[in-house]
Amino acid sequence: VLFQIALSLTANCFLYKAVTEACNNRRIGCITALLWGCCPGGISWDVLILSESCSLSITILFLYYAVRYLKIRDLKNGTGMILTAFAATWIKPSMAVYTMAVLGLLVIQYFMGWNRKRTLLLAGAAGICVGIYLLYAYRVYMVAGTFNLTFQGPRHMLASCLRSGVYKHYPDASLVEAME
Image 1 (cartoon, helix red, strand yellow):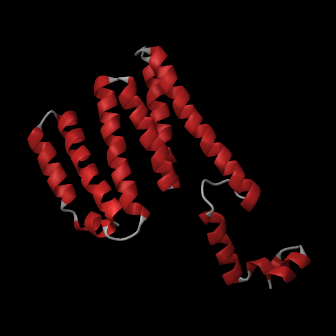
Image 2: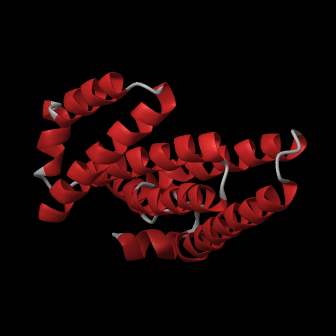
């Protein structure tokens, strides 16, 4: 819980920086950070062990690096954007969409002719992240039979099948017998 609270406070500082840099207005940054920092929903998630608290914080860090990269277009902020997208995926697998957004941005950047060497380097790093996602999803497929970034899906489906009794209609009688 202390880690989540510290991460949330740190993320609030990064939110201030991101909004201030995006708008070029400190007042808007202060108001946004104040409203976000005082949001009862976020505060209540911070004091519970939930992935939502960490996912909100990592999203703000991703936003910060994305704004910085769009403004400065340097390797450091591009790498930060990719690493936070990668970390976000392991907190909540649905956040793999951040990595896809980064790849989309880099494709657009490449065709606009903005420092193609750096763009290809960052796209390669994002591609490695996607490769790791695919390898992990393949591992889940080999173990659980579903191509997914998490083992929760197969467990939830299994629980539903057991509760509803759908497994009783499976053609393999020995498997049905073993489950009963």
